[in-house]
Length: 309
Ligand code: PMV
Image (cartoon, rainbow, N blue to C red; front, side, top):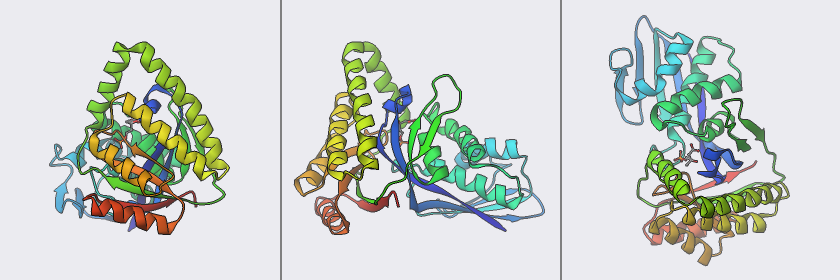
């Protein structure tokens, strides 16, 4: 028996911009994770998925989404005769990096079960291969957060070499509240949409990208300096840029407005947009409860998290 965890993620700064090699600031969420437990068996590769309540033989049902996503892991690690049980406190399809967390948890459990000696870097690389199955050419930010579970600076290497990953240590925790738009966005389509509009309006998009570059560097300093007011302001500016590149929707705009009107320090969408989640930064636990309540009164689900501990 062995087990492994993969963490949920929150992108504080950088969705879409990271696809083009600009810096992103994102964090794994320590108390939201997918956990895989493994047990050696006599034959087959069984997956007991307690999230979707399915039991599958991954060798027989190769079209099942989990079988496709996990294929790079099973092939590369040459795995057989195993039963994998999946549990998760991350809700799938909510822009919290469920698929990356799932892959990381399975890789880590197999690593422990078979004493494979994989490093974090190797776990992350393999999880990236799984991510490409469902997301085409993702930047890699999700699997990196799922692997390390910490706040990090992420920069995709545009020449196919190693991405820049730096763990950031904060002097105090930051309190955040996710608001759920209740709508679903397709990351693949949203990324493609930004690319198309960027190609059609190069000058306008260059300006936005230049502004983001300055903003994210200020944001890193503000985070490291514990300046939550500044981080909040920069989140608001980042949201304006995300609106400009066309990935916000009225529900996300409304959630941001509600958060700010009720005392949040900053608010922006998080993840690909077009639906999914937004995040608001607040001063303390009391404010987390207040903002959650406001979201609830307006018909939106929420999740309270802390990062940088
Ligand atoms: O859709 P999500 O939550 O996995 O976020 C993706 C972030 C993007 O920058 C839009 C895409 C990527 O691969 O980085």
